[in-house]
Amino acid sequence: MGKSRIIDPDQVVLIWVTRGIEYFFLSFRVSEMDRHSRFDQFLNAMGLEMICKGYLLAVYRTEYEGLVEKKAIERIDELAKNGAMMFKN
Image 1 (cartoon, rainbow, N blue to C red):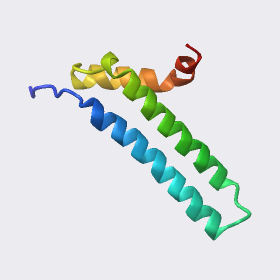
Image 2 (image 1 turned 90 degrees about the vertical axis):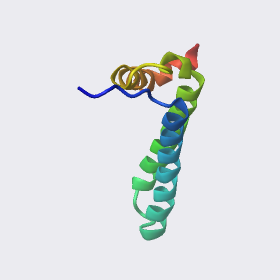
Image 3 (image 1 turned 180 degrees about the vertical axis):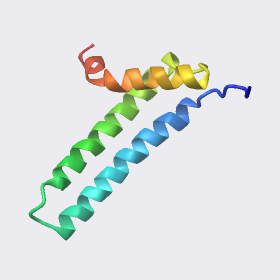
Image 4 (image 1 turned 45 degrees about the horizontal axis):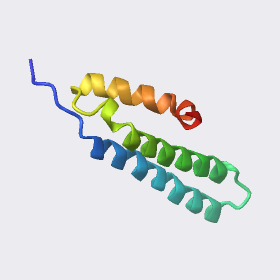
């Protein structure tokens, strides 16, 4: 059996924020190709959501920092799914 990896919080945040920026870029490309498409609005919303969740994962990094890969991924998923609740606190 292989050794479990430890998840790097900086890498987690970088992935979420990068994905958000990619969604923003795609929204601009879609709006250039088809001005009547509403898909660009969806991509804008997704980009903003990914960046906000990346921010939350950076703020709450101690919640998954140092956990083995499986546990860290479970905690990251939980934090990302409950992101809106954290903004209320």
